Amino acid sequence: MVNVDISSIYGAVPQETVAAMEPRLNAAYDTLFSGSGAGNDFLGWLHLPENYDKEEFARIQKAAKKIQSDSQALVVIGIGGSYLGARAVVDLIKSPNYNLKKKDTPDIYFAGNTLSTDAVLETLELIGDRDFSINIISKSGTTTEPAVSFRIFKAALEAKYGKEEAAKRIYATTDKARGALKGLADVEGYEEFVVPDDVGGRYSVLTAVGLLPIAVAGIDIEALMQGAADAMNAFSVKSMDNPVFQYVAARNALYEAGKSVEILGSYEPSFRFMTEWWKQLYGESEGKDLKGIFPASVEFTADLHSMGQFIQQGSRIMFETIVNFQKPHGEVVIGEDADNVDGLNFLAGKNLKFVCDQAMLGTRLAHVDGGVPNIVVNVETIDAYNTGALIYFFELACGISGYVLGVNPFNQPGVEAYKKNMFGLLGKPGYEELGAELKARL
Ligand code: PA5
Image 1: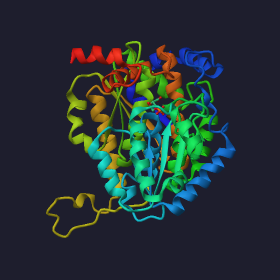
Image 2 (image 1 turned 180 degrees about the vertical axis):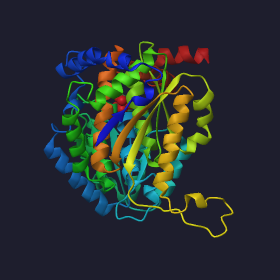
Image 3 (image 1 turned 120 degrees about the vertical axis):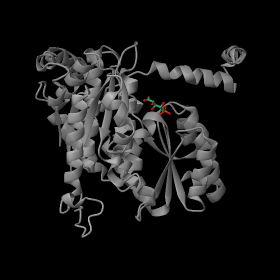
Image 4 (image 1 turned 180 degrees about the horizontal axis):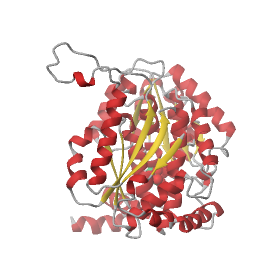
């Protein structure tokens, strides 16, 4: 499933220093599981893999089948925690080229995560005259980007099918009682799915927020939940043998030793959006009170030819966490060439996976020698089960790590600042005074 190797950090922090973190980890673990810490009204994700709404889960599967049967495209509208998890899982398990592949499931377009005119026009163009449905996802139901985007795509849907038929093609994932989207969904009769009150956006991928788009892409969401459930049980051990404890201890020991940037990477290009999901999870959870590890990401080996220079020789502020998927889904063997003009016959007969592994091992040694400690997170293979386990691994580690750091890992007060300014500048009712003040400054 998932295990962790922290042996490549001991040049930067002594093994005893990492081991000595155990009592602090135990305390953070107890705070999390007893629900006695800051943000304790957002702990629903902790037991979600087993304690989820089974009736709603069956409705998600049914809705996914309907969308697969009546739509060639699904527009998933959401931002932040209402977007990144689904995109990450679809990219990782299906492919970043999912829409380009021959398949019997709909293309999926992610919208509402931008205010770019060109991006919206492009999505409309890509849908063209094909049959489509919309999944609008917003816990608050009031976030500007998805709300604006929903108006635009809803208008296109209604123009194509008429209001009544369009309503049968709109699926709203939102709060069970509050918000403008909930009100609209009730009035228009959209099928509704719930973002539980006690699950924050960045911890919501295993709710309807992530599960509906993931299921539409043809991914086995039962296996995803099973992986998360098995991880939940496997990682419930309060000890340094627990891979979650090892990861949390390592990253906090490195932070306290002056490493303030964590670079998450993998040698699988399909992992890219998982790093985006992880950046939100850790960035929003830990980056507050003037504290926190800055979460960054790379895609290897591609970025060894760009960011590799900085990582090897730039400011010594970072450590790496490499997610290593151990088993690929097939085999590519490098051939023999009679002329050997490229000089690569020394690799003839070798498996591409072997070559990649040597790149990974060589990079780890080089980066560690260059002062960049490495944490390795080993995952058996890329599939729904292991992805569910990896999601739970990172979520649990994030909750514990936030309490070790001494912050509330479940709020995000900092993201409100830009929203208020934007509302003021846009003239939203209630923000007139702020708007005038800001305009005077510009
Ligand atoms: O983690 C979070 O809470 C945020 O990233 C939200 O998910 C994001 O702002 C979208 O919010 P909402 O789902 O309310 O539209």
